[in-house]
Length: 181
Image 1 (cartoon, rainbow, N blue to C red):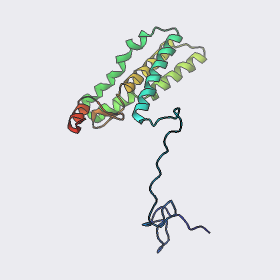
Image 2 (cartoon, rainbow, N blue to C red; image 1 turned 90 degrees about the vertical axis):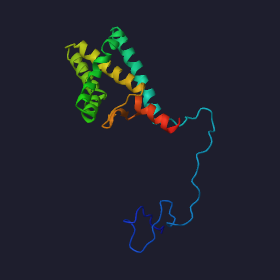
Image 3 (cartoon, rainbow, N blue to C red; image 1 turned 120 degrees about the vertical axis):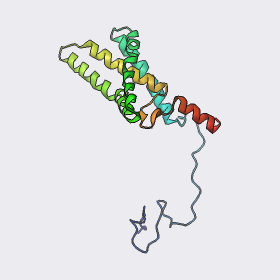
Image 4 (spheres, one colour; image 1 turned 30 degrees about the horizontal axis):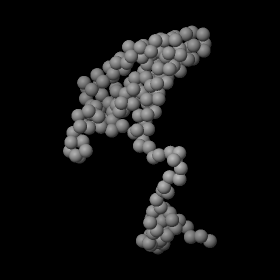
């Protein structure tokens, strides 16, 4: 029978030696970690930075919003006309960084425009067309997508410059000068 593999000291019976997930006793010599093999094909997917991936995804969502707007028969500039309306959420920063982050994040999460779009679709399905609601939802999603593509992510309570996508503005410039990058 194979010896049990204990993940932590709490799992191991009293007096037994802790075993690692590889089955070796703790403290035993371990083989060097395996390195990923060199790419065997030029078509292999490269390792992507999660922040870069989110920014590219956001750019795709922004393009999709323009396509949906034009395909629905509305002018593309309607997205630009409504663009700054959603940044009124930054007024929350007048109450402090935490309140500002909450207000900003509520207005810059895809949840509310998705709910608004669902209401517009449900209304259209029931025969009550509320076109402006759909345009508002798409414009809102467009705004969020452009912000994220440019690196303006959801805010933390530390201040406006601290986002889930990294530092922006003065905080980023200050860090790059102190890091020597």
